[in-house]
Image (cartoon, rainbow, N blue to C red; front, side):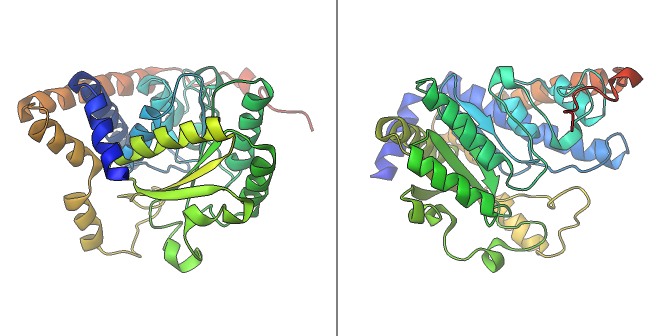
Length: 330
């Protein structure tokens, strides 16, 4: 039945819309690659966690959401900012600590926010975004809004106690929250299967929360699951869990050489499950586009990204007067 739904969903997307989605996925990937390069050149400092390899999760999730839905995630947040409508200029300016950054250059890689765009972070404390996202979902219910909060976390955060406390409340109060578990196989150097008992999508069973696992490398599988989950959440007035079976190509952060896995393992995913190549092949094989057309689109994305790099690296640093602003009193 799910395969039938996916095939139906494919027919609902026009070729022009799919091109826009592919362009977004390219933007996620190219910005991650450029961020890694800038970090290695010393232009970006501090902690830095990249999203390379997980682009279909984000593109598919947003394709299944509606205007007015909110999004909150962990510190692997650069691509999420783009997906919510933040520009590359604002993201790269934040990464380089500039006043023109999305958080005025004071949040850096891990703390990016754009509430006016439905983007609530970017959170550095592992798992902290889950109770916050549950609270945002409470707002939607309290205000009688037909919207949800997509609350994303990784396999590395899946064992945090606050997640289970939040799920208990979400179930009791019937909150419109979609918990998205981005299982990219490894936490901070440890394989998920070594530290996570059972299936992550089944973690809500104790709280009467349904869940499922989908192929997070397949845009259409993700979009179909999120579309269906969103409908269920609003109609049944119940939360839902989707575990995305995905993979990160780089280490946990820029300081992680990822020696706990083989090069062959990473290469096998790139060759057989890469989300960009999946969409690239589909657009050529099923929609009649040419390699030249898609390569031109990639050139356009790279050119826009270079403009963003130039903007970020020439923007001013925050003024000293900003040092003590945006700080809550103790």
